[in-house]
Length: 111
Image 1: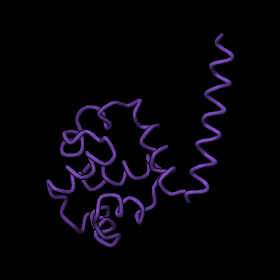
Image 2: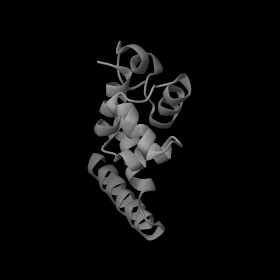
Image 3: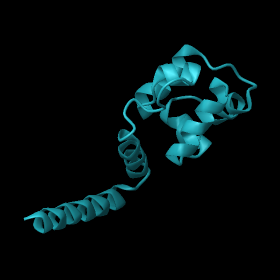
């Protein structure tokens, strides 16, 4: 699998559209689409940006060796943050209230 396809795999695994993924790493949607199709070159800057923004292992992006994520358990956190950022401020407030309620329920259940 090429670097280009690994980038697409990361995006799909995070459940992001090309537009949202591209915006998060400050590139155009058309450039990302070109990379995923293999028409555009994947440079070290792009690999570094993807690694920093989505906690993806740079070595895996370059070679396909090792785990995709620096820490596989962080994938859920990365996805949750991505979803949270897409919400409006009112929706974010509601989501935080729901998470707080779940946390309190979990604490009460473990007592």
